Amino acid sequence: VQLQAFGGGLVQAGGSLRLSCAASGRTFSNSAMGWFRQAPGKEREYISAISRGGGSTVYADSVEGRFTISRDNAKNTVCLQMISLKADDTAVYYCAASKYSGVLAGNPGYGMNSWGQGTQVTVSS
Image (cartoon, rainbow, N blue to C red; front, side, top):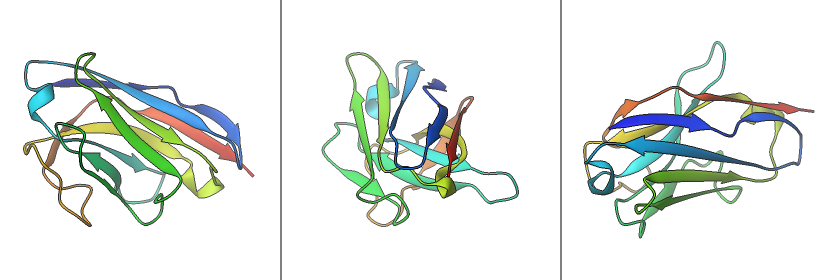
């Protein structure tokens, strides 16, 4: 599956952004999907995942309650709604596809093995 994230930008602390990811490939609806981010000098952080049918979601503690992941299998898209943004959320955000159809509680990076170009999110304090 090929992935392209978009929707990033510059936002003030406390603001909101909605990221989207366009996917192509026959396996999209069979795969759990997720988002990770990477800030300069920091390790990759997987922040959210959603099962192939959308019925199960997982979030990292750092974004729990502020970010919401969703997907539309008819449109081959996965979205990440972000509210109450903080300066620490500044990073390049990537969507990712899992080799599994389900998600694992406490591990939003479970099975993620492919990703595309990311989109920059900058939160000014």
